[in-house]
Amino acid sequence: MFENLSDRLSRSLKNITGRGRLTEDNIKDTLREVRMALLEADVALPVVRDFVANVKERAMGLEVSKSLTPGQEFLKIVRKALEEAMGEANEELKLNTQPPAVVLMAGLQGAGKTTSVGKLAKFLTERKKKKVLVVSADVYRPAAIKQLETLAKDIGVEFFPSDISQKPIDIVNAAINHARTRIFDVLLVDTAGRLHVDADMMDEIKALHAAVKPIETLFVVDAMTGQDAANTAKAFNDALPLTGVVLTKTDGDARGGAALSIRHITGKPIKFLGTGEKTDALEPFHPDRVASRILGMGDVLGLIEELELKVDKDKAAKMAQKVMKGKGFSLEDFREQLVQMRGMGGMMSMLDKLPGMKNLPAGAMNQMGDKQFVKMEAIINSMTPKEREFPDLLKGSRKKRIAAGSGTQVQDINQLLKQFTQMQKMMKQMSGKGGMMKMMRAMGGKMPPGMLPPR
Image (cartoon, rainbow, N blue to C red; front, top):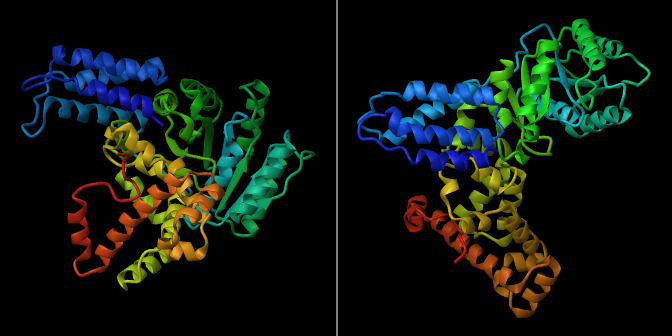
């Protein structure tokens, strides 16, 4: 998300000039560029107007710190304004109530509501250690009930059965009673969606809300719809006392207009971002981190949290022990690293969180892309266990067989072996005395092997 906006803002902020202070003259052109960048990102016009006015007011006549250039000072102002536009800080779900805490999920059909219920159930179970029950009150689509039941089974949470012959209020009241007697912490309620906002839909969900009194009412909306997402959220917010928004499909939204418009238009915080199709592709929304990513500063805290959650610590520890004992680093170990990388949402989702990655040449980014990692994994999968353990066996005929089996070329295999050899050397350096320091000196600030830009 935000690729286009990030590129435009980065270019415009480079143009700031001025000797000792920011003045109307030297920020005029940059503010015009910022305004155009936001409009192209499909940010709602009232939001753009207020954002630009806010930045201008703060920047006018501001004395520049001796340690900062005017451009850096202006960047600080823009970053702060972005944070404020999106809500300043992450707002967690408020679940401090007599159990079960009822969370009602509302939204239009196709926004990813049912999937988001499943993702949220997994998030609350694994990260917040809550006992979660899910129920579907969508009596118009039997497929939605079945979908939630399947998701619940995959995630390992309990599903409360419902039927299209029942009334939504009866379904949810029965689920609340079940959750109360079985001591569940949280009940997540999936509701019916429509293709557009209509009076019947609003009357039904208002009646359901009044009957079950949820502690959280989350509006689920598709980021791909841009500022329309904010307008739809406002229509729901006028009818229901929303407590927050879940913005889905952000991995497919290169503009980011919805994220920058929703808070301003509805007054409600974005609480979660849906970042992919997998059940663990749900992130708490941190405006400060997102502002950093928009301005090309990365999100190192987010990356550390992701690594903490998704790296298989047992496998990593075993590999470290093996390397430290001098037992070498095999192609099978290399393959394990690639699999773990894919499990973390792919290389590109990680790179997006690293500062300065947008400044790398396009060729280097392509070399580090997910397709490259999938290809490398396919090549290693086409090898025999013996070949993975002893790469020196890989000569002409074996390489041809592996290329045919993996749908690649012999030159791809040669490139992988070259990168693997460099990785092996790095691991060997690490295993010796003072290994980590030696390795860092040897790398000399270059990218790690396996991520080398094409020559």
